[in-house]
Length: 517
Image 1 (tube, rainbow, N blue to C red):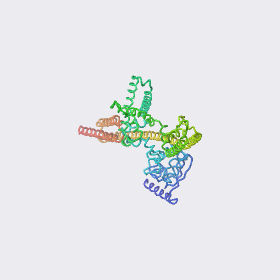
Image 2: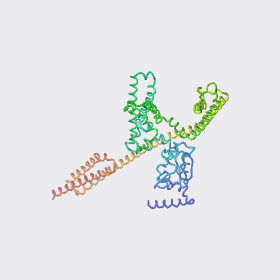
Image 3: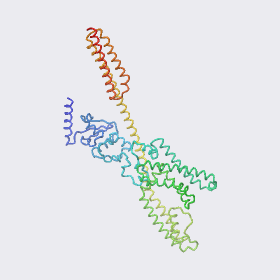
Image 4: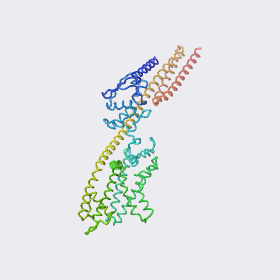
């Protein structure tokens, strides 16, 4: 009967799929009070997702029904059905926030689809698959390329140095690195003060502190190098090159006491300030803004260079015959004045004295104001867009972490529930087995003694012993088993106890017959 009903529903569903011009049944999806209509053919597009499984899996909610309700975001349901119909997922619907859109995609199990869905990587904020990200930005700040495989001890150590939000130990390591950078830069600045420079004891203490910090930076650099899977990419990354250059001077100065470029090597220690970019989101946004607006900035620099050359040449020829004090000795000398004037700084070390030269200086001031004002709007809009993108990326990462945490908690609950149900089923099975064998042992003993009163007492005792043995099996072993394999062992022990009971009953019967014969 079950087979016939399944066949009937299968043929019925097949006939319904052929309706509506081959598009199949009309499916009504009520999501948060908004009812959307789609066709079965569209909803079968992505196997592994929720709506497709409702149609294709045995006992699915949509195998025999045309209506389903979800208490979810209503506008997200429209985009979900559009994805089923069009075959690709929208990157970011304008009326849905990124974290809500990701949660809805995860709820409808788009990430578990057995076929590739176009646009899903971008919708989930997958930075590795985001083709819109600038490669220079990815090269500067992305550490995901050298990330070890999931579930390994190497990954846990990698997160300590690369992902400060992964654990409290990673946060402590990040805080220690940031504090070391601040102290190191402070030492570089303080040791140039004349009073401190004259105090040899203070200089010795500062050198010892700086050496300890360099040892920590060296340990951090080579630890990250050993943990990454892409060592060549790690070494060639810009920030890592700066990290290496900032620790080289100390080790070189230890190996070579007198070095002609010692001052230059000490100046390179100031580059440690760039290590702050790894810990500061604001500095990363500024760097991303400069990289994104590099074409506009290059055009501004090109126009600025033309104005510098133009005003330097004009002011040189107008002030060439200055009888008072010839400041403008050549065009390259005049370029310094042009740069200072166009930037509206005006140090006053070089000034035109003739009326025509002063007119040229006034024109340079006005041109400088216009030149500085023009790119501000472009850079401001780029900065706003990058800051918003950085904020959204941060929210997406937090939403992904929350989803992973919820998924792990749900899997643990389901595993515990399945284990509890198995334990309950095992206990019921063993209790039924115990009762059945006690009854069977009692009946077997009664039949074997053939109604003889003299032999019935020991047989009953044997049945009681069998029951007690089964109780011992149950109390000693069955409660400790948590799966069906344990139940099989208990079943085998019960068979042994039952066989022993039958053997005792048979021996009692033979002895009673011998006494009466």
